Length: 319
Image (cartoon, rainbow, N blue to C red; front, side):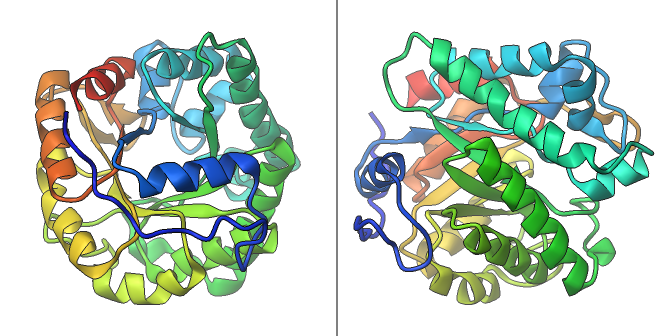
């Protein structure tokens, strides 16, 4: 059994300074203090594509909410059955900005976001597992998550992330997952959006192999900017697994916050469908990487693009 890093102790009072703490979040905080691993789900967008759903850009995974929501529900169900403790909403691209690009009425943003939350709640209500399943509301970069130069102006960031955060709160998420962040500026806008609606949040950055944000800012600079807002955890995602360790080691030296990691599985990004399934890392190889991440201080382990429920099952059994 691999022992996970014991993170800083949390204030479990009803109010946590900036936002209200529910019973479920208090339980998650206690787990984050302990030495057990917490398992995040794996990919949704690439899993939709792998199962035959349409994921063409700009809608990518959000298109399935319009065309085949039962497929999204099936994927969430499979991740819970595979051992995931945290299930992430399919809201990576349910923003008004994306719907406007797709020439779909932007009023659909609220409807699709709430539907994405409902699909998870429906699955949880039927799940055989008696353990608490936490719903993480995904907030991602408004533009391409590999193109920091496209990051919008602050006013747009604040307004659009706050709109999504409001919709996620209406949908009933337990906390917000500010993920695949590539600039400090957009990360702070998403934090402010979370705080504005009174929801706790975790943060995950997308870095290069040297452990710097894709926007060329350092993790040290990022942590200085975000730690005062007291996130539940901080981590890295949307990178090849072999490139993760520099970021994890830097995070462990720089912070006492719990660390999350979720890397790519098989394949690589594609400009049309979002993903091409070729090469990449097998489930067994991914587990070997995950053991290394845990030994370097990570506590929350999941999967990003190209991973499947089988990856999460092997991780949950192998750590």
